Image 1 (spheres, rainbow, N blue to C red):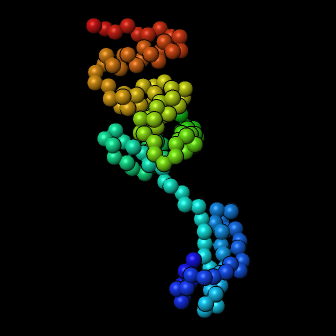
Image 2: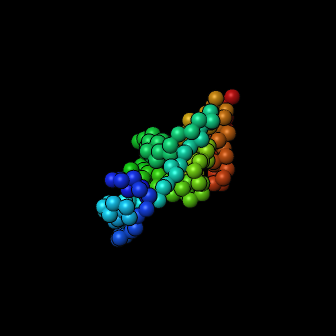
Length: 160
């Protein structure tokens, strides 16, 4: 550590204390050249999680984007905001645990789809239609059939 007064590099630590619930260490130091004292703070350098988009660009992870996607999919559905906050927190925790510094937007979308599938089927289909970029009603029906067959229901027959 360089002394802020005389720029010397030799110092000694006089006192160390944990701050901010153990996330930061405060150190009182004394310069061995000029004998002046100063305080430094040490914290863990966290690498922010970045999301790799479809086009290859990288953006900072933003939990608000997940929540807004869920809110849009669940618009006028019987799902509380608190439930959507919990879902968002679960997805955020899962992404943080499983990935170091980068995660694909496709993986995050798959996590959202899995949560919505168990939460509300209409919201799931709404989200899937945007996320999977359905081109026409046939693709939409394929998704509905898969969802219904997974739960043992009868798939609706298409009207030709």
